[in-house]
Length: 296
Image (cartoon, rainbow, N blue to C red; front, side, top):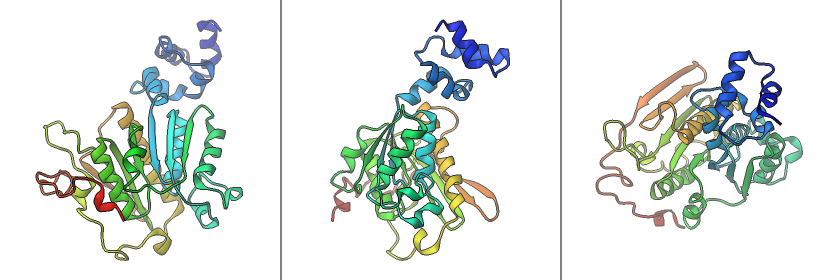
């Protein structure tokens, strides 16, 4: 189709100036007509544009967990056009999941979560390649699983996995965007201790905040204490925004900060976090030199 006809066809609903701006941003890039229509609202954004959308299409993100947090993350990454999404989860869909895990349906009960995710994403955006990994991330496979991806998104529900993923991302020099939820509250962090901030200071890792996991049973899980279903969407959507920002290098990175959301009071707090020189992983004299401490 000639470019001027494609412009009229794709941008008919837009005011003329917006249509011309959209055309300018895609003129030098190879997008199909469907891609221009699908991603037009991204392409219109100066911070993304055609080149940014092309970067998303070529990006690879590994998502740990296809549950409460993984569901909105995977859905929005696919809708955004992130070309390859790996999903690690060894669990099956259960009826109790459906109150918050919007990636799955009643018909998915008993199905592997990663296969349920693959089916859902294929319906939302068939151009996206979702790689189902139906196993648990462990010390002996973490580095190999993480290596092919540009970024890791952690939505796991236990401290054992959270610390393992943090340590593996550190040794792999991969940016980690992590989130956690419980009851009515959530937290979001971005960790890239392999980078420095604007002042040249090393950025923190997860262990700079929490050097080691709490004793078993000290902090309840969502299965024990409950969680508001919609909270997963709130925190998961914020997590996905941070992922897209990191993939495109736009906006202000959350690295070096912790965002806390308190649902019952509708309050957000952003707290500055610095690298800990005594961190057992990324500090001046690290005690953790590989993933062997996670092996069982």
